[in-house]
Structures are given as structure tokens and as C-alpha cells.
Length: 337
Ligand code: SF4
Ligand code: SF4
Image (cartoon, rainbow, N blue to C red):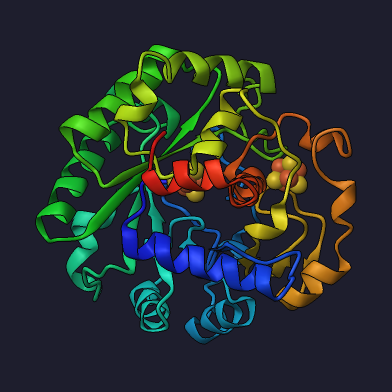
């Protein structure tokens, strides 16, 4: 993973402690959705199809911080919806940062430049923006179903970098992508915009997403990434994933799902079993772990999991496999893709 050294050391130490305690299931990243509302309507999004009264709700900061403390994950990814539509998202970030959580604020960036000075965000080694960029101009604007968004994203990234913030990106890949479109966007983010790190996500086929025609199957995902990563590309890019997760998406290794490592807390509670499926809610992380039948999920166990290669199910599996092998641990520590 190309994460900063201090972050790698903290996460490594945290995982080591869990192993010493013989804790089988523990959280690596907490996904936090403090609202469902968004200012875009992307065709592949399965998060915003809620009744109007639900879209108006905002999670109190104390509730979000309490859930993060109970769960204990060292990293928190704040998403939604669009988190900048939460009037106290800056206080939420600052409270988590003051508890030494590594916080990622996942935003489509449309409101960033306009509202930046309304919020009290401060550059910190514990805080990074994670900006949604699915492709270059035409591809991204088609993905978010609105013209002009790509140009706004680019301007926002430049402004954030100028103000000293750490900026990462997240690129979701659909069947409309080709190896070349993935190469083009990652080259642009890596070399031209020079963001700090980039994430990739094979799109998950949400049942509620308006566009059901452009999700990739497992074999298509593997083929697309193995071609995009060829010729040394993977090594050149600052990808924010463990080498074994990248091996997984290009089909060099396979894992079972370990969704307990990336639990989701939203306005309804801890979502079972993961960020993508919605099989009920638990009041506490402990209850989520103890009351979920984890064996009934994953490829081959639940048809809804058959095409899933999302990081929320498989990045913790990759991290666990990495720590089980000295060779892989050294490869990850070196940041060699
Ligand atoms: S920006 Fe994110 S939350 Fe908003 S509609 Fe698009 S995918 Fe969904
Ligand atoms: S494979 Fe895991 S992460 Fe993917 S949908 Fe199923 S339970 Fe969720």
C-alpha cells in the first residue's frame, strides 16, 4: 500500500495487537454514512434511493464519534450521500482526528470550492479528502450524469493541494470502461494532477441502482485490470491498496469475503453484513459481529455476492493474507505493486 509510513506503522501495530489478543474478527476501516442525501444522481449509485424524509436526516456528531469509538477501527471513511451536505461534517472530522483516527472524507467535490470556507477543515497527517473521479472528462461526466463535474473536480483538487491537504481519489470501474480508459484516468491522476494516492473499485451491482446494465462480472473485472496493470503500469501508480488486493482484482489470487473488516455505520445502525448489502441493522459493532452469520455470505454462498470484488469485502482478506506470509509482508512494506 502506498500509504504514508506513519500510517502504515500505526495500522501494522494495530493489526499485530489484534493478533496477539487472538481476535478473529476486527475492524480495519469503519465506513460512516452520516446522511443519505446527495447533490448528484449517478446511474450506478445504490445509496440515494430513500424516501424524502430519510434524505433529510443528518447523524449527530456525538453519535458518529461514539460509534467510531465503540468499533475501534483505526481508519474512518466518511461517505453518504454527499458528506459536505452535513452541516457539521467538519466537526465530525475534527473530533475523529483528535482521537487519532485516520479520516477519509469521500466527496464528489462539487461543493468543495464553493463551501470550503464555511467549514473548519485543517490539513493533518490524519486527514485526507477521497474524491470521486470515474474517468476523464467525458467518461466522468457520463458516470455522474452531469456535465461540467470533471472540470470542477480538477479545480477542487488543485485548490486543496494548494491549501496543503492530502488528496486521494476513488475510481469506480464499470463495463463501459476499457483497459485504456482505466490507464488514461490513473495516468492523469498520478502524473498530471499528482494526487497523493488513488483507489480503484470494481462497481458493485446494487439492486437499487437506476443503471443495471453496466456492472462487471468477476472474469470481466479480472481481464480489465490485468490488461490495465500490464507493462509496469501498476508499479508506476500510487495505488492505495495492498499488493495482494491488486493481485486479487487482476485474478492472480482469490480470497473469501471478510466484510467484518470494513463495517458500515449509517443512520439506521450497523448494516448487516456490509456496505453493499442491507440485511438489517445492529445497534453495536459487537452485536454486528456476534449476530451476523458471516459464513452465509461471499461468492458461492449468496447469489448477491457472486460478482462482488469490492474492497469492503476483500481488502481485509488481502491484508490478513499478507500478514500470514513474510514474503508478502516485505512486499507490502516496500510498497512494491
Ligand atoms: S456522488 Fe456518490 S453518493 Fe452521490 S449519487 Fe454519485 S455515487 Fe451516489
Ligand atoms: S461478497 Fe462480501 S462485501 Fe461483497 S456483497 Fe457479499 S458480503 Fe458484501
